[in-house]
Image (cartoon, rainbow, N blue to C red; front, side):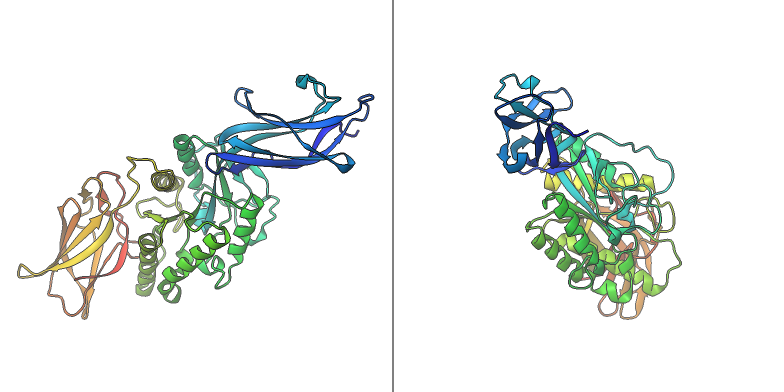
Length: 463
């Protein structure tokens, strides 16, 4: 049987989150109408409005659509305030009947939010491979664009491939728990708006797949997906780097990542698009000396990206638990999601009083006041004071012209300062590393204010 009234043919999907700008969003609807069987009439008019699903309040009152040839219609509803969930309603008014509550039926679109879209990009820890049971239930107002191209309530796993239309980022195995539902919950609670998560990551993907200067296949896929949801997003959640921990790729990682960010911002027409990143967690595979240095170089590139590229931020993950040799566990993912949420709230949403940054090395100074030298490390972003939970652990490494310099001990000597006591004199240029290996010490110094560990660093010259 043919439908009557106002029929929607184009418009947002159920569960869609629409990117707000300056606190408002807009939607465009179009379709056709039919009055078959509704009697004789002289005129017909389609109307549309926005209603709160929470209490049926009218958010945007009935607006008339433009009536087109062949019983078609279209309308754009502007100035929809950020919030939701909302219901889009349509109706068909015949002969200017003023009783809108008795207008003829129209299609509806349910569970719409006007909020912020965050894109998930990177490799498997972005896709979410945490395994095992953990309490992280779905929540209304945090929605996910699935690989089927359909909006849905956000539930784990995020990057599963049921009815996928994006084969470029189809996982080879079933993923698991993701950090980003926890991220969405934190932002929604603090900012008071719905959050849409747009998953584009792929397990095992190297940076070159995201960089148009090299391969760029996942870059193109990501941009196409963003265009499908309106072309505007609030920011990108980036977790990638394990696949670039080789001698050749690790050396060039910072330059190539910087180019990748430039391409994203240029194509999305947002020169200050926020990029929230994660410094690599550990890998428990058997490590060679060169593998350790490659992991150190990538972690350092991630640290430097946040120091040198505007609106790029980094959080640590080395204290987060694993569910296998390289993938964060659900418990670890919850910590990562919360840390990224704090960065977003502090820097994107401009909330005050949030400890969002981890301690970050600023200098390494050679001290030759005693018979044997020391190296004094100073850190920025220490909100409380540094805590040593493993003062006998090998967290730091010093190298000079002769090779590795043994560190006889290290201790915290000021609220933001660590002193390394060396077992011999330094010859030539010296460099210090912190937690750079594939699987470094688990006992990293912590900030008492945030309880985040210091960011790993590599190749800091000792002055």
